[in-house]
Image 1: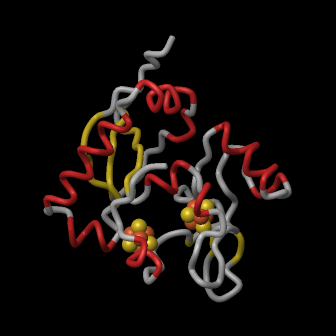
Image 2: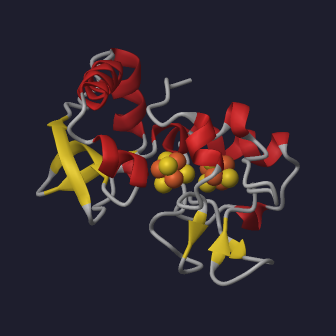
Length: 168
Ligand code: SF4
Ligand code: SF4
């Protein structure tokens, strides 16, 4: 599991995550190949929960407008938190593809990020995350899962990542 930047108690009071304006939102979590099958089997889910491009398919929000992740419960908690997807563990940080470069970026729409962007805590965490993603195992994972490389908007660049698989 990736260490978290945003304290859990902050996220539980925020409605910024796990909700989407559109059903086929680019912000819906994208899964690693190994997570697709594991999730379908563990949760005994219908295959339609995951799209062909390996994203969790949001469902209509039963309590309001827009769409939500099917794993979000009424208490604003993730039902699969202890085994949530890699991309959910990473957020508000994102792997971004820009001009053929793979970048570690952060979403400026997260209020906690906005407040703490200039802090030492943010700098320290960014260094931790960049080092974590630079390990041979993580590079292999990113190399083998190009579906995670997305051109997200409204993000701030932190560092370019090298995702060449060094384990071969
Ligand atoms: S937007 Fe930021 S503070 Fe809000 S739930 Fe998501 S990660 Fe937590
Ligand atoms: S899997 Fe959990 S953390 Fe990820 S979007 Fe769904 S509810 Fe949120």
